[in-house]
View 1 (cartoon, one colour):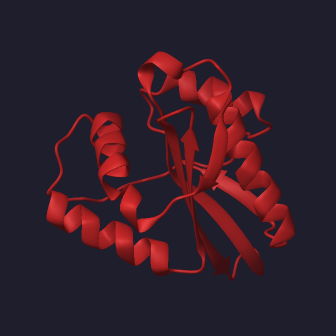
View 2 (cartoon, rainbow, N blue to C red; view 1 turned 90 degrees about the vertical axis):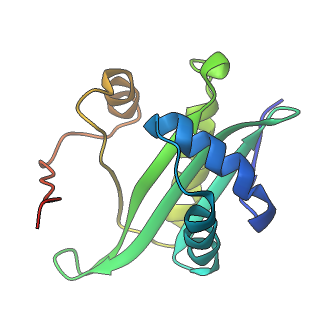
Length: 142
């Protein structure tokens, strides 16, 4: 049975492995840990781990007050389910827990950005009542 709980500092290595797999990149573990621990300390962030005898999924979400919404908006930063557990409802459980938390915290909406190549994720979010509302532009050359 899948259980979803708040992520803890001691989950750093698990989350590190998940994010490296998600992004197909090996990050600097020391820098990653500092960012992870700093993010956990921020009361506006929501981090969940899904367990099925071992860790099988992760979701991170940052919440901020946005002037153009005149309220709190949650943005999913990362969501990951281990390869051999995809399609079993773990992502939905992570998202349902986030939706329940957002409702309790009176967050106006949940947003997510998903890379163009992640077609399966796009279908998942659409099924979960997300709709395409904007484009995200990135400037990494400055």
